[in-house]
Every structure is written in C-alpha cells, then in structure tokens.
Image 1 (cartoon, helix red, strand yellow):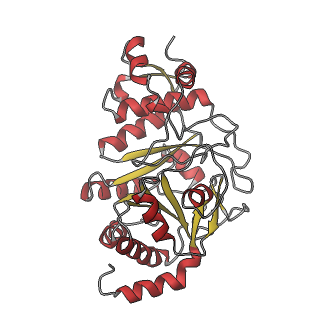
Image 2: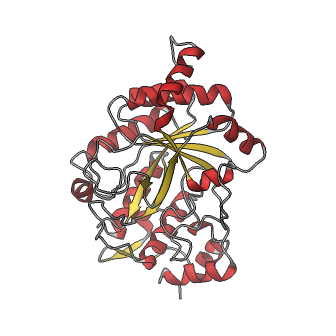
Image 3: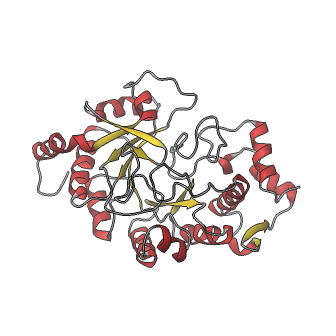
Amino acid sequence: MIPGSSQASVNNIFERKNNSLKVSIGTEIVLGLKKNRADTLPTTAYLMMGEKCSGSCLFCPQAGTSNSNRSLLSRVTWNKVNTDIWPLIERAFIQGRIYRTCIQVVNQPGILNTLIGEVSRARNLTGVPLCISGAVNSLQDAERLFQAGADRIAIALDAASPEVYKRVKGPNFSKRLRLLEECAAIFPRKVGTHLIVGLGETEQEMVNIIQRMYDMGISVGLFAFTPVKGSGMEKWPRPAVESYRRIQTAHYLIRMDICRKEDMVFHGGELSELPLTNEKIKDILADGSAFLTSGCTGCNRPYYNESPNSTMFNYPRKLTDEEVKEAVRLTGIIP
C-alpha cells in the first residue's frame, strides 16, 4: 500500500489511469482475452504502462523522436485493457500458466506515481511475483516501488559501452551504472538489467559488461537488436546469429560461474577461445539452456526479438536436439 493512502484512493488511481495499461498479445491469449493460437505462449504476464517515452533511444518505437506505431514495444503489439486484469492474472498464476508479471514502463513525467498505485493495487489483489522494468531513475524510486510491493526491478542499460550508449541513448552511461550499483547493493538479488546485442559494440565489450553486472549481483536479460519501422535505427542491421550465439555462450558460462571473462580469448573484439575442452563445452551446452531467453526466472518473451518463421535468437521453449547442435555449431568456437 502507498504510505498514507487508503485502498479506496488506490482504486481511484486505477480507475483514472487504467487506460494507460496495455497487454501483450501473447499475454491476452494466456489470460483468455483472445482466442488466437500460438505455438509458444508467454510464461510471464507482460503489461505495458505509458506511451511515447520522454527518452530518445534510437532503437525504441516508443521514443519521443520515433515515428513508429505506438502500439509497439520492440516488435510486440500491446493492446489496451478494458477489464480488470489482476483477477485474470491471479487465476492464470494459480493454474500454473504464468509464473510472474512484468510491467514494462514507458518513462513519462509523473508516471511513477501512477505505477506505484498500480503495483500497490496488484499486491492487494494477487500473490503473483511482480517485476517492474523502467521508471527507476533514482534509488528513491526503487525504494518506493519495493515498498509498494514489487518483487524485482529491471534498470535497462541496453548498451555495452559508453560510446555506444552515447550514440543510441544519450550521455549518462556512468550515471546509469552508478544507479544499478546502488540499487543492487541495497536490494541484493532483486535487480536486473537488459543488454541489447548488435548496437555497434564488440563481443568483448558485451562480455565485459555482462561480467561486471554479475559481479554486482545483477541478472542480465539478453536481447538481439530488432529494427522497427519508424524508429531511429530502422535501417540498422540485425546482429549476426553466430555472434549472438557466442555471446549467449559467454553469458551462460559467467551466469553459472563456470568461468570469467578474463579467462576467455578475444581476437579483434570477437570471442575466439574458451578455457575449457571442446568436450566440456559441449557437455555444458548440451541441454540448450544457454540459448533460452534470459532474464528473470519464468520470463520467456516469445518472439520479442523475432517472428516465428525467422531465425530464433532467444528460444522461448526447450530446444530440440538438432536446434542445440546447430546453436553450438554457430558459435564457431567448438569444432
């Protein structure tokens, strides 16, 4: 509950502001709001709050400078909700169809207060673990969200280096890192970040920042850059899947504390050698876990980076044996 507020006032906030809450199409199917068929359904209920961000990230369709369709975030379409979503989410959680809820927040002046009202209301209506992605611009913002009932927060870094960050997001790379460090220190194991592969960084830069995040106790959700029509980077190419597989492999080895980035060999910024035998690497990668969607537990983000008929960057479900073999082959590291 918001300090100093009543449940009635929280409900009033919801009634006034609910038109800013949207649901991903996959989540609508899981919750029974749509009858569409899908080969893989989300295991997290994905909600979005706000529209037309005050930021100007060149890769994002919600950026204030973007001419993209405002119903998009990455390549996912989000629709307004005309019903109270939380009882439906609670039912899906009890039935084991979802494992958490993630509210992805488009930064706007004043949206944090609306978000806190929504989080407080959700916590009063459901026991579903709740992650907030966005809207945290200070340690105090994080504290307010946790007090309201959030279980985790994600503070997107997106870019792997100061140079790339400045080009695609703005000049505050160091400030963002400090915020991540502060929040992770005060709220251990409750902070995550997002990193986008393919914004112009080298593989070595990406692996370096991944290691830095895990050293601070921050989980990493890896994304493959996805060009969206109307965004500032709509003409920018997608990352090579071979490069993405190498970074996924390095990320998995770091996350599982099998080896560190200092143990890996890079040539010209590209990962070329790991401190393990080929047999050991194949054994570690055999179940395909390295190539699944990464981030919070229970988050599979189906087709967030790709369409069902295109190259899979993040697999939202268990890989087949052939898919694992192909993913390992594409790394180019293991004969």
